[in-house]
Length: 458
Ligand code: ARG
Image 1 (tube, protein in one colour):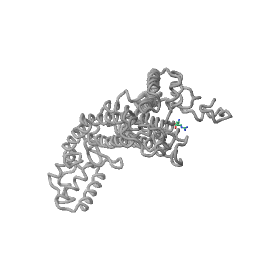
Image 2 (image 1 turned 120 degrees about the vertical axis):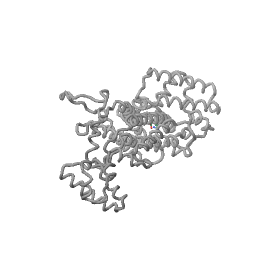
Image 3 (image 1 turned 90 degrees about the vertical axis):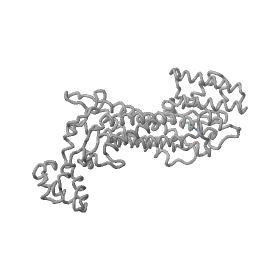
Image 4 (image 1 turned 120 degrees about the horizontal axis):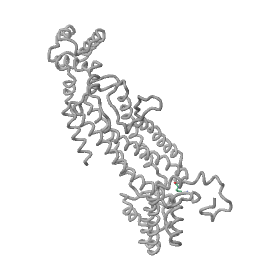
């Protein structure tokens, strides 16, 4: 490997240096953003008369031509040139000659990579926000389609209280709403231009940093050159936000997997998102949901890699920072694939209403309402709780449901029972009584669906 900036060296680089040090095999994907930033930098150098306007124009034209070739996949990147920055600079000089050698005036690869990553990340954030929105829309549509359906609500994975299926799915809507807001907030925080910091101390040229920021649509410019070239907080935040989304996706997928099992048999995921077994002809496996659950682990790994990468770095730029790319690229790719595939899978889910209705009858889910009914009649709730517990025990021994008991049987446990209490045990009555903000009553859930749709339109 010949040396890029060999003036200071007498010896050759060790052969393994290229394998260890090249980054173009993975940072080549930054080319469109690198070129965009270079065009803004060149234009500013020209308008500030730091380089001749004619040279600036040649650079801009040359960079545009390279961008067109990049888009057509017509450029062969050379790992001997190390990274995407030097590859593009070399391509520029090859194309336009000496003017190309003036592009790097008042700039370092340190502020260049910091700028490229922010530009790339900003576009990924916008994409993720859109994908989260699509997923939320799929959840709302699913909730609305099945808005009358009642299922068991679970705590400890035991039947707890009946709820609307829509209420259950809207819980995920809320999680992804917070996730979306986290990306919206990150976008504001990270939309800051590092260019102008150069290696780390700033430059002696009269750069117009604000002009560059405007052209690149940054809200502002970085306040401290040393921070600007060595800060990767935003990359960590991106991966942290991604990890939280993946955690939510994984929980959702875990439920879809459980619900597709013969034990639950609540749902069937569409053929496009399930696979067969190589040996068992009857199998229909929820592989997609399992893979999303599984891929969550690698995104956590990406976040961990970045936190560990950063913890011992003194100011300012250290070459270790090159190692931030693969984790953040992986987290972004994995997240976007998983969001998109999950949003597409949800509309293919068919539900088994009969099975759900059967399940709602199991597990004594009327018990809380019975205790509440006695409490309303004046009995202290704790006392009512004890009485209903004894009734449940009685039912377990007699192999009966609470709804099988007659008023006479209830009255042997407390004289406060009356017909209206017994009549109020239908699942729909139980659900409708949770008519409180945030509750599962059909009225509240209908309002939640309207609110959800409005927040997606914003
Ligand atoms: N490829 C490098 C990175 O990703 C670009 C900056 C290199 N700067 C340097 N001084 N070696 O961080």
